[in-house]
Length: 111
Image (cartoon, rainbow, N blue to C red; front, top):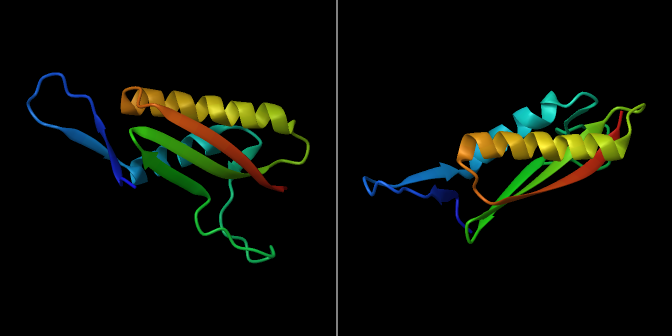
């Protein structure tokens, strides 16, 4: 599994890659922008602990982003998840020059 993905370089002056940590930061920031949702971090009161609330997999040039989120109790879960996917997709598109990606949302907790 690659730790970075190369961006197409049409000038042939060098190569540029983006680390999976950058994708993690972009996804976390975009998710926390959505009202009623936030990235689920470790919570000792739960039966299990999340080590990585955002998982990034880079395989064959495709970036898969899996985000575990907490959703507000009064919010519509479907709308919030769609908003998160749109926000993360927009952020990734703007910052990474349209690298192919897939975004999966997992609701871990309703707060």
